Image (tube, rainbow, N blue to C red):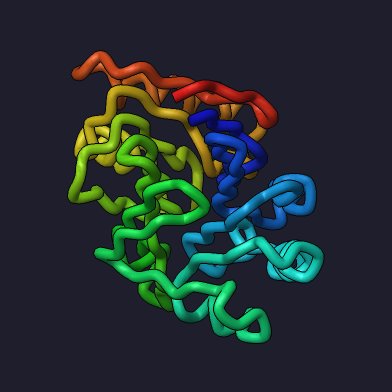
Amino acid sequence: MRLTKLGHSCVRLDKDGAILVIDPGGWSDPAAALDGAAAVLVTHEHPDHLDADAIRAALSSDPGVTLWANQSICAQFAEFGDRVHEVRHGDALEVAGFDVHVYGVDHALIHPDIPLVVNTGFLVDSELFHPGDSFTVPEDPANTLLVPISAPWLKAGDMIDYFRAVAPARGYAIHDAILNDNGLGLMTRMLSVAAAPGGAQVTRLEPGTSVDL
């Protein structure tokens, strides 16, 4: 399986000629991200993770594309019928040739005055976990963790503790579009602190960079 890091929290996974895209939001050039996709997973409804117009265009232009997300997102795309699939915590799915397990319920708390939305994390092929905007620890091991490094709901200590709780063999930074170069450097160093006790390999991939998992 090949992972390509796109903008912010969006990634593409390629395997056996099929492309799975996770979280094509407004900060990740979603139209380009969705080009050629067989299926789309969306963790939650915030616009930096969900560009509804781009996903609607992809579903309209290719009758083979499917969408997998929580109920509040699926309701926005009801006109596409059985190509839109509601997911929830505990689901085990086959999506375009990928094995997908779904974990988590809520978005991480920003502030009590800001309502929580549903957030679902995705473990793909028992290898890579995308938590969306959460500190969800999957019930099954994840060899590769996509690690949010900057958000209104996140501080460096939380990120460090989260990485150590999941205990992957490697991690790649995501949720990074709001950082300038100084912030990217700082939070990448904090990611190294998170990984130090277990000796995990961690890095931030530049958008467009691919690695084989």
